[in-house]
Amino acid sequence: MCEHGFLANFEENICMKLWDKGYSIDRKIESFTVGRDRELDMYLAHYDAVASKAQANMLAETGLLESAENEQLQEALDSIIADIASGDFEIEESFEDIHSKIEHRLIEKCGDAGKKIHTARSRNDQVLVAIHLFLRDFLKEVADKGLQLVDLLLEKADQHKDDLLPGYTHFQAAMPSSFGLWFSAYAENLLSDLAFVKAAYTVADQNPLGSGAGFGTSFPVNRSKTTEEMGFGSMAVSSVGAQMLRGKSEKAVAVAMAMVSSTLGKMSYDLVMYNSQDMGFVQLPDALTTGSSIMPHKKNPDVFELTRAHSNRMQALPMDITMIISNLPSGYHRDFQLLKEVLFEAMKQFHTLLDIMIYAVPQIKIASDYMAQEKYDSIYTVENINHLIKSGVPFRDAYKQVGGEVEEKTYKPHKDFKTSHEGSIHRLSLELIQEKRNKFSLDS
Image (cartoon, rainbow, N blue to C red; front, side, top):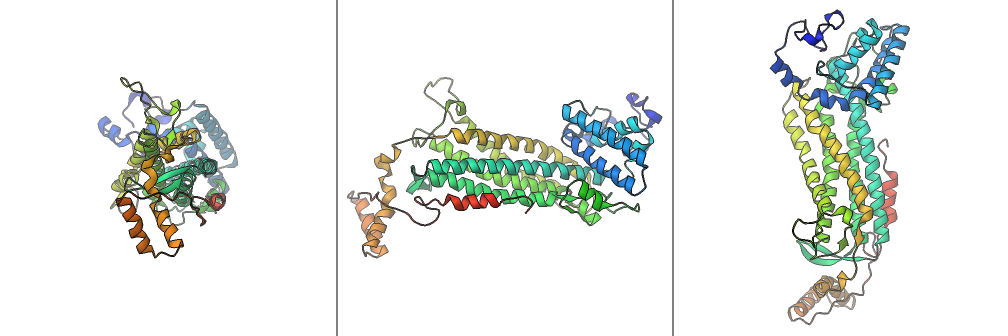
C-alpha cells in the first residue's frame, strides 16, 4: 500500500502509480525519479487520451473488453479530452504522470472497465505512442509555419527584385547582389530545412502501440487497427525496434529544429548588420526595435538579436539529446525521461521563434540610395573584368588590368550589366522556387 495519507480514500487502496507493488518509496527518491513529469506531461495529455480510445476500441474488437465497457470508456475519454481542451484538467501531485491520472479518472468513472484499459499495454508503448502523436502534430504545425514564412520571403523577393545590395564575403563588400536574391535565398534554404522536418515526421509517423514493454504480448491485439484509427502512416513493426524509436524520434525532431534554426539565425544576423548605421540597407519599424537608456538616437534590433540567440540554442539540442541516449543498449531505460525536459520546452520556444519571424518579415523596409556610395564602387570590379572579356581580352589579362586600375585609382565601375542565368540578379527564377514549395508535402 502507498504510504502517503492523501491516498487513504483511493478506491480499494490502489496506489496512483502504475508501477506500484504495495511497498513504500522514499519521498526524496520518488521526487527525483518523477522529475518534471507532471508538468511536462500536460503536453501529452490529449494524445494519451486519444491513444487510449484506440486501445479500448481494439480491446473490444478482440474480446478483451465488453462492448458496454468500451462504450463507457469512450464516453469517459471524450470527457477527459474535452476537459483538457478547456483547461479544466490537471495532474495533481498525488499522481506520477499523465498516464496514472487518466487511468485513475477512468477507474473513477467506469469501475472495472477502467482497470482493464491497460490490458496488453505497457507504459513503455503507452508513453511512446503519445509522444509520437504529439511530435507528429508539432511537425505538421512547423511545416505549415515554415511554408508560410517561405511564402512571405518569396513575396518580398518579388517586391524588391530591383533593389541592389552589396554582396559580402569575408565581411568584405564583394559583388553586386539584390534583395530579390537575398529574400529568395532564405526562402529556398528554408525549403531545404523542411526536408529535415519531413524526415522527422516520417520517423514519428509510426505506431508503436502494441509493442508492449518491447517484446509484444500474448494477447491477440490488432496493431493494424490502432495504426489506422490514430492515423499513423505506418506501423513500427518490430516490438524491439518500436521501443528503439524512443530517443531516435526526439533526436530527429531536434535535428529538424536545428536545421530550420540555423537558417533563421543566419537571416537574423544579416538583418542586425543590415540595420546598422554603417550599412543602413534595411529600416526596422519601431515595433521591432528598442531604445537605449542613455542614447536617445539608438534603435536596437533586439528582436533579431534574440531570434539569433534562440536559434543558436536550438542548434545545441541534437547534441544534448545525443548525450542522453548515447551508448544505451536496446530496451527501455529511465534515461529517456530526461528527453521531455530537454525537448518539450524547446519545441514551445521554437514555435514562438517561427511566429516572430512570420510577424517581422513583412515589416522589413528596404532603404534607398545606399548603392550610390563610393565605397561600394569596388564591387563592380568583376563586371569590369567581364566587360573586357566580352571584348576579347583573356581573363587573366583582364584581371590584371582591372587590378592595376584599382591600385592606380583610375578604376571606374561598370555598373551597366545584366545577368541571364537562373537564380541571378536579373533572373531570380522565383517560379522555380515556388514549384519546390508547391511540391512539398509531409505525406509524399
